[in-house]
Length: 502
Image 1 (tube, rainbow, N blue to C red):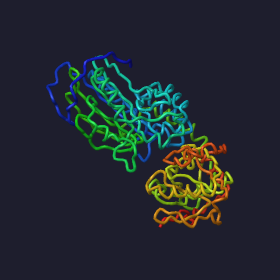
Image 2 (tube, helix red, strand yellow):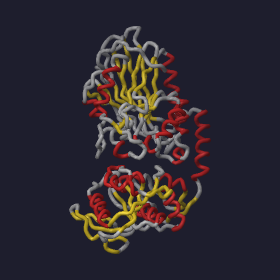
Image 3 (cartoon, one colour):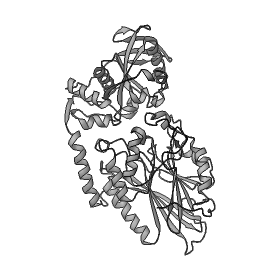
Image 4 (tube, rainbow, N blue to C red):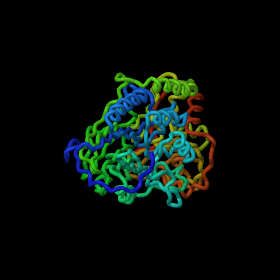
C-alpha cells in the first residue's frame, strides 16, 4: 500500500455498535478491519481452540466475502508476536511472521515483548514479515522514531491511517534492548499525529498495545486514550491485557476493542464510509474454530515448523516426582517449589552466595514425570542472561529492603536463594546468608538476570551498580537445565519460606 496525499477529513465518528446515521447511497464504501493481538507464538491449535491454519481459513473466507461485493479489508495485529511458545521462540518468531504475511497482515504495532530481543533482530523480523511494525511513541536517544509511527493505506476510493502506540510501561518493564530509547506519553503522541492524519484519511485507527483495566499498571491504558477525546480518532484496536471484549466500548466518538489473545478469537469491525464520513459501524469477535475449516497450505507449514522446533526441545533433561508450580497467580504473590528451584539453579550454576529472580520471569508449571527441554523453555521463554554482582553487606541489606516494598501480585515479586529474612511491616530483620548472619562489612556475590540488573520491572536499585555487573555467559534456561540434570529425580518438596512476610 502506498502513502497518501492530503485529503479532506470526514466529520467525527458518531456510530454506535449498530447505528445508521444516514441513508447509505450507492457511492458508500465498505471497510472491514480484522484484528488479533498477543499471539505469543501460539500457532498451533490448543485444547480445540485457535491455530493459525484455522485463522488463515477464516481470514481468507471473510476476505472473499468482502472483496466479492467491492469492499476493502485490513488485517491488523495488536502486538506481542514474540515470546511464549518454545517452538516459535527457538525460531525467533519467523514462523509466526511468515504465516501472518501469507494471511495478508497489513501492519503490526510493537508490543512490549517485541523488545525482549535486540532491535537488530526486531528490524530483521520486520523485513522478513514485509509488513510495517509501528510505534509512534517509541523514540531513540535522538528523539527519532526507529520504526514507522503510522501507515497510510490507499484503498482506491478510501484512505485509512493506522497509528501505532506502545505501552509506556515497556521503558520500565523491558529496558534491556531499548538502546537508549524510551516511550513518550501515549496521549500527547496521539494528539499530535491524529491532528495531521485526520486531514489525510477518511478513517483513523490507533493500533495500540496499551491494555484495558490492567492491575498495577503504570502506563496509559486504551480506556484513558479514548477518554482523552482526541478529535478524529475513530477506532482503538488494543492489545497487551489479553482482554476478550464481548462488545466494543464506545467512549465519546471513539470505539475501543480487543480480541483476547493467542489467536483464539478474531476481532471484526464492519464500517460503511460515505463521502469521508462513517455512517455505519459494527464490531464482534469470531471464535477461531478449527472444526469450521483449516487452510491446508498453512497446516502443512505448521507441521514443518513444529518439526523444526521439536527436534531440539523434545529431549528429556530429567524428571520430577511432583508438579512444579509456576502458575502466574502463585509466583507473583508467593514462593513455590519451582521458584525456589529456579533461584537455586542460578546460585548453583554461578557459585554465587545468593540469587534473585522475579515472579514475572517464571511463565509456566511443569507436570510430574519426565522433564523435557520444552518444559524448561515454557517456564523460561525469555532467554535472560545471568549476571553476577558483588555487593557489600550494607548494599545487600538495601536490596532486601527494596524487595520488601514490592507488592504481592506484581511481576516484580521477588524469589531468592541462599538467604532468609523476616519482613515485618516492611522492615527487614533476622537476615541470614547461607545460614550465617549478614555482616554489613562483608562482601556477597549475587546472581540475577540481566533484565533485573538493567532496571527491568522497576528494579532501578541496580542502576548505580551497573558498572560492576559481570556476564556469566549463561542464560536462565541453561542454569535450570543443569540443575534438573544434576538433581533428578526431583522430589518437588517445598522447603521453608525464604522471605517470611508477617
